[in-house]
Image (cartoon, rainbow, N blue to C red; front, side, top):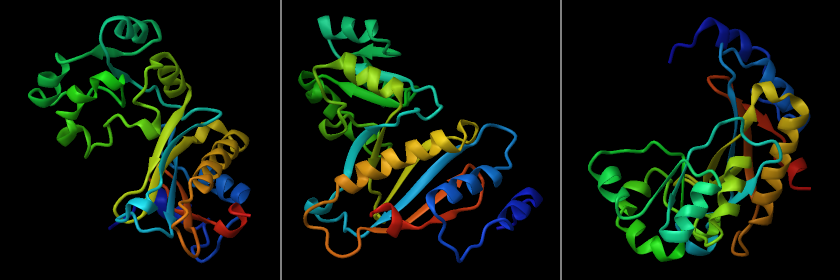
Length: 231
């Protein structure tokens, strides 16, 4: 793949064989961001688990202290009082059965996170095939299946992110924007890593944090010294 001039110049700042301390890695991520827009900083964390086994799944949610810098659109599946509560709490879209044809037939995905009250999961389950692959299915572990819709919406709007393993045992999550500066990015990153370390399954054997890479949108990957994070 041919890279642009800016990328090539930025990549020269990174020693591809080196493992950087967190603070150094975050500084480099900012220095190597070459986009004209405010790039997202992402963490890619490979874990020493096997996601094919139910007892080695790693999934959860964490509120980043400084948010992600992104405006998150929240859809809530609820009825009656809970629907009114969701609207009052600032949900962008609220509905019940009426949302099924809109999502299934019109292929509408104008939201970033879906929340549901437990009584709506029978309805939401019918959308599993379309919501599941997009990572939009409400889930109790992520706090998105709940009666407390106000708290769920507030947390999501404040910067709550969900983390989960992909098929290759890697977690991909945003930790903020380049414009946040080093201190806020580092606090967000440390909060995320603490949550992932706490979520270590009892069945996981050997080295848990296999590799941690930070990158900005369209920027080079920077390896973080995983051994120091897990101390």
